[in-house]
Each structure stands twice: as C-alpha cells, then as structure tokens.
Image 1 (cartoon, rainbow, N blue to C red):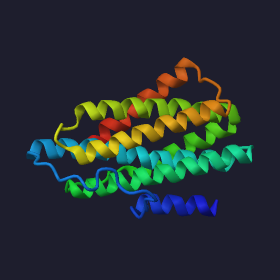
Image 2 (image 1 turned 135 degrees about the horizontal axis):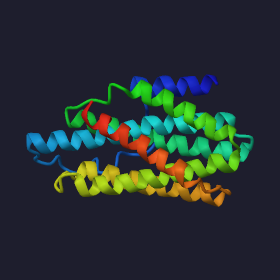
Image 3 (image 1 turned 90 degrees about the horizontal axis):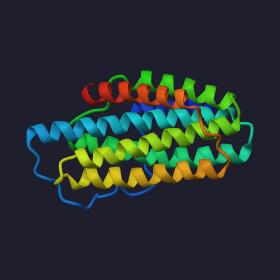
Image 4 (image 1 turned 90 degrees about the vertical axis):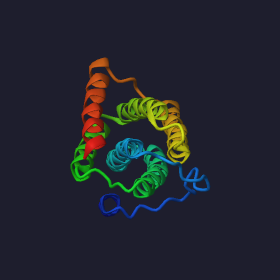
Length: 202
C-alpha cells in the first residue's frame, strides 16, 4: 500500500522517470502551425491521461490479485507504462502544453475500477487488462492517423506505446484471461470516450 501511495504521488506530481530513452528523441522538431500544435498537444494530453489511468489500474490490480506471479506481471507492465507517462509528459512540455487538470479524478476512478476488477478474480482481472489494452491500442492507432504527418516526434512515441500495449494484452491473454461480457466492454469504451473528450481540451 505504501508503494502504491508513492506511485500515486509520483504520477500526479509529474515526477515519473522513464527507464528507456524517449522514442524519436533525436528527430528534429517539426514546423507546426498554431492549430496543428494545439491539436497534437490535445492528443498527447489524452495519451498522458491514459497513462495516469494505467498507473492507477495496474497498481490496484497488483494490490488485490491472489496470484503472486500475476502481481509481478502487473508490476512489470506498470513500470513500462511509467515510461509512457514520462514520455508523454515530456512531449507535452515540448509542445508548450500541460497535463489534464482532471488527472487526480481520473486516477482515483481508475484505481477504484482496477480494485473491483481484481476482487472479481484473477481471470476477470486479466480479462480487464486485455480489453483495456486492446481499446488503448485501437485509440493509439487512430492518433497515428490524426497527428500532423510532420510531427515525427509525437508519432514515434505513440507508435512505441501502441506496441507495448499490444504486448501487455498478449501477456494477459496468455496468463488465462477471461473474456469480458459485451455490456462491460461497451461501458468501458463509453467511459474512455468521456475521458478522451475532456482530456483533449482540459
């Protein structure tokens, strides 16, 4: 619980440290119009908020899982997600923007959802990871289509994040994930849609 509280503080205080180099760090900064820069920043703010939620979800799920091996898998995934958090935060700064003002709310809600998923059993817990990561993978693919083509720095980050999310979903499936019912998947997608719409702007 102490480690979880420490992770929450570091996540919300913006002190996350990446263990891997930022993808595209050596690429030149693109010439973006004011509209393009604002749009790219909005998309990266959504991605940053998604990583805030990921920290909360994985922390809660690791806390309540009954299987130490699954808990270790969640902890490893959370460390990789912390890379994403640091990368998107740095990119927001480069785009002269800032994280969502509602990140503490997103974190608290995601932690509660992750704990509930974990308490439902390890296979449900893993199924929640699979569905979450598949939806994230899909929205990151859409961001690659929506980012300005010349913004190669943002695109490099998003592409690497998408690959990591796909791997996390594969890990959960291989560990015995139970597919979630369609109404639950639809509810998750609707909740994510609200978060993305708000985080894009604020």
